[in-house]
Length: 210
Picture 1 (cartoon, rainbow, N blue to C red):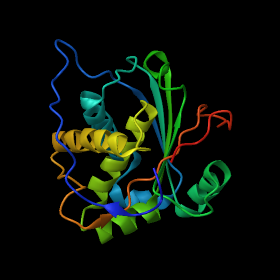
Picture 2: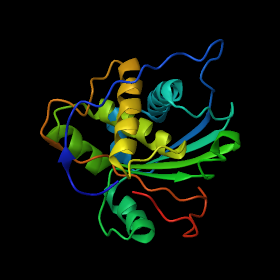
Picture 3: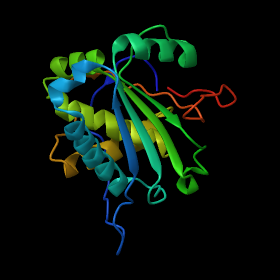
Picture 4: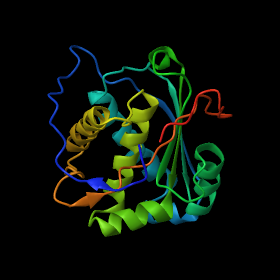
């Protein structure tokens, strides 16, 4: 992913079929609200319920199926704190919307008991939602889906990868009754995410992807 705006267009539609006889795996999700600003969306239990719904929607369409009970950590923070992480691990000294830290490389993530960490910053998410005329609730769900797809190995370094990832996001959001975020607007900044391998201590042995 790059930091430049890109032309917005409807993502190609994927035909996502339910896995026969199988439900999406149930993840062990930890949600922490580091900034009190997130309380505007409800208490921690309400936020956890929303995050769980978003992850289930993403898992229903994701090509990679993680282990049942795999651990996922979500940190709801603010621009000040995410700017530090973005500076230290991406080299961009500015706030961003979402950062993802996979616990294992893409070829091993399906068998990993830990998926990794997602970090989301309130002020940036709020500004984006207002600018794009969508609810903060819906935009948060989109970024959770985007971040989880990164943990499962999806990326958008090339246009083909971007179209694939956007299609998965649109399909997942549709399951939540949320409209295609890539349609009906001329410009959009693609959600920002970085990948490092360890969720506890990111390492530069695996270059961040943004």
